[in-house]
Length: 250
Image (tube, rainbow, N blue to C red; front, side):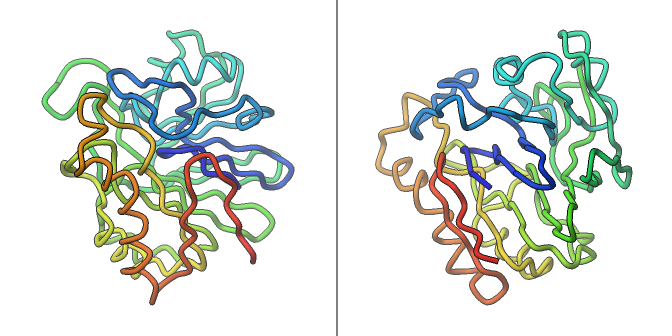
C-alpha cells in the first residue's frame, strides 16, 4: 500500500492494483500540489480505479486520463454516463449496498455523508450522484475506503476492518460540512475499531496564495498527528507522508 496524497492510495491486493480517487498532477483546478511530485511508477499497472464522488479533487479528469481511457473505473450510481461522455469506456456504477467481483476482489459501495454535486452544494443542475465509500475485500482482508465523509451512525455497523483509510482534513484553512477533522475522525475510529488506520486527505493540496501562511503550514502537517493522538486507544495509526509506502506490519 502506498499513500500518494490527498485521497489517493495505491492498494496492491489479490494480485491487483487498485487506485482510489486518483490525483496525480501538479495542479487540481485552482489548487497546487505542495507534496513532492509523484513518479509515474506510483500509478503504473493500475487495474481498477475507485471514485468516491464527483468533486474535482476526487474525480480529477486529467489524472484519470493519465491512466488511460480504458482503465476500469467504479463510480457512484448516477455518475457513469457523465464519465462515459468524456471518453472513458470501462465505467461501472455502484449504489450504496451494491457490489461487484473483480478477479479475487470484492468491492462494495458504502454510505458517505458528503455533498454529491460536481460543482458544489449550491448547484441544482449538472452532474449529481450520491457520494460513497468502499469496502475492498480480498483474501480475508477488509479495507475501508471512506472517501470524503462526515460521521454517520452506520459506521458502527462496520466490523472486522483490517485497514481504514480515514480523511482527517482537506486542502484549505477550514472545513465545510461533510468532512472529518482529526477529532471527528478519531470518533469514527472508535465506532469502526479498525486494526490499522491510515489518515488521508491532508498535506497534499493548497490554495497558492495561502500555502505559505503560518496557519496553512501548520494545517499541512498537524491533522494526522492530532488524529493519531486522539485515536490511539481505538486503532494503530500509521501516519504516512504523501508519496510514501504505508508500513503495514500485520
